[in-house]
Length: 421
Image (cartoon, rainbow, N blue to C red; front, side, top):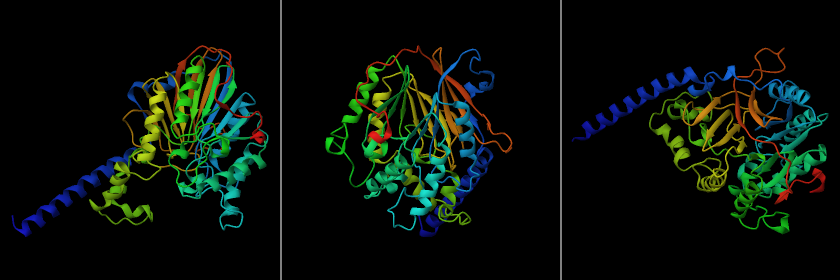
C-alpha cells in the first residue's frame, strides 16, 4: 500500500467519524435537558402517597449549591425555602458537598475570600428560621479541588459554618473519613461518609490525634458494615459527596460535542471540529480519569469497597451530589441518588441502569410515613415564578418497611450540638 493510499484511507476514516459524530450530536440535542424515565416507570404520575398516612419525617438532599446566585433571586434556594416552610421541625436538609465554588473558603487575605463568604452566607441565611436539622457535607471543591492544601480549606469552611449557623452540623467533623451516625427520628438513621477523604491529596486526618474513629483507610468500611448490621431493623440513609452510579461526566459519560468540539470546554463558542483528536480527553476521563472520576484508581477503590458493604443490605438509600443533574438508580436492591444540581447543570445520558435522569436544577426529597412507606420526590424550579412549590417531574415509592425504635448507637455519632465537636 502506497503512502497516498494510506493517507486517503485515514482521511476517509476521519470523514466517516466526523459524519457519525455529527449525527450523534443531532440525536443528542433532541433529548438534552429532557426528562428520562425508564419505560417500566412510565405511569409514575398515577401513584402517590396515601393521603391518610401521616408523615413522620422529610429529608431534603441538596447538592452542589456552591455557585448559588447571591442577588436573592436564586431559583433553587427559593424553592428550598418553600420546602423548609412546608416541612417544619420534623425534617432535615443534607447539603451534599461542593458548598462553595470554585475552591471552597480561601485564607482570610486571599483575593477570593469575600466572594466565597458571600456564596456561603446566602445559603446559611436560608436556614436562619428553620427549625429542622441542617447537615453540611464536604465535596472536592470544598477541599480546594483535591489539592494538597485542601485540608486547611475544609477546616476553614467547617469553622465558618458552625460560627455563623451554630445549630448546623458539619459531618463528619474535622475532615475525618467517618462514618458518623445521626438518629433523625425513631426508626430512621442517617450515616455520613466523607468520600473526598479517599481521593484527597496532601494531609488527611486519621486516628485519635485528629478526633477520628478510624485509624486506617480500610477501617471506615468495616465500621459501616457494623453500623448497618446493628441497624437492619431501621430505615437507613447513607450520604456522601461522590456517586456510586452515574450516567454523567464523573461516571464516564460525555457528550458528542465534547468529542467533536473539545475546545468548547475552554470557550463555549470555540466550535472548531477536531474529530478523533478531540476524543482523547473524554476517553482519558472515561478510562483513567481525574481524581473526581469513577475511573480513577482512588475513586474506583473507594467505590468498590463501599458497594461491597451496601450491596449486603436491601433498601439502603445512598445519596450523593458531584454530578450536576438529578439521577435515581434502583440496583442490587439498593436505591442510589445523585442530587448535584443545586446551582449548576450538566449533561446526563439516558438509559442504562437509571430509572430517572434529568439535566435540570433542583433536588430530591425523601418522605418517611408512619406505616413505613418511603417516597422519593423531585423538586425543580418552575418556569412560572408564581409557582413556589416548583414542578414535580418524577416520584417513586421506594419501599415499605416496619418502623421500630432506635437501638443504642454504635460507632461515632453526631454530637447533640454542632458546637460540641
